Length: 158
Image (cartoon, rainbow, N blue to C red):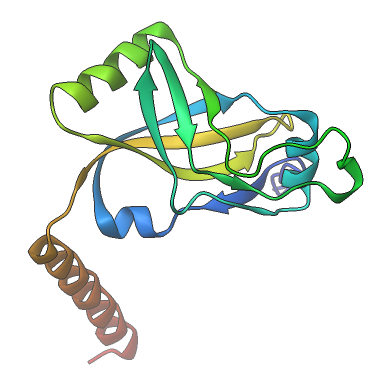
């Protein structure tokens, strides 16, 4: 059987690994992001960070705050601000669901990963999450460690 061709356009730009440690993820959602040309060129070189960023619903729109996209060196004349607010593109139904989760249920909208999809467009995977307490983090870590130890024992055949 022929191997499935991997898409050449798909590329992970930035990942927020800390999010799964600090938050209990309820559900996730893929959304578009409104960018300037110099930002897209900078993202193609892989210079960004979404670790300290968050998303919020303000005035009926979804905004990504504090995401870092490095300035594009060749585009100094028409450059961009590194940490400006960027509009996220979601449907009205999804926006209402996100607003409901943050305002009524006390959840947080956390970016998980920024990537180029199969068509070459920049997408952002966001999640509705609830902050973990210290004991929850310890329990998650203990569960993960036990899973690793169990796999190791099965592999060794003991």
